[in-house]
Image: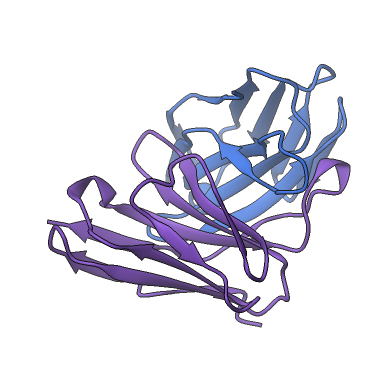
Length: 113
Length: 116
């Protein structure tokens, strides 16, 4: 079965610094989602990537899917305290017409002011 | 639109008690899902539904039952709660699914369940 591995598991950065979170799949990815979760809250959709080499940006967050479609990265530029939270990658579990997703274990980000 | 809502937000149960978690969505989504989130394990799919009146098992279905009698509601039941079911439960819904046109899943705020 497909598994998603996120790294690092946790990250503490100084405000203003850049950072990258990685999500690696054991199989080819057909739809990779990035979500953000604040403590005690639900998941907020950030971006979805489908094509090899695809890159999307929203404000200071950029997500990329590699050409082989087995690894995605989430990059935050000039981090702010509002970026703190848990970042999860999710991917199509490979079952057609069900929408089932599998998720990585999450990366906890702390941003020190 | 309220999006995806979950009730209750927090509950404490004793071992052996039963309860039902309610998920409601007002986006006319066809697909609905129940996940549990545990430390260091990400989200795991419990059950899901691809339409009104249909349900199917996910990755960790044991000890749970679900029903989708109305398109907008997806209920998760625990018949005899166990401490291992202490977790945060998330409901999600999406318009469609599958392949290149897979739709984004929208999540509720979660229900924290503690089983003593």
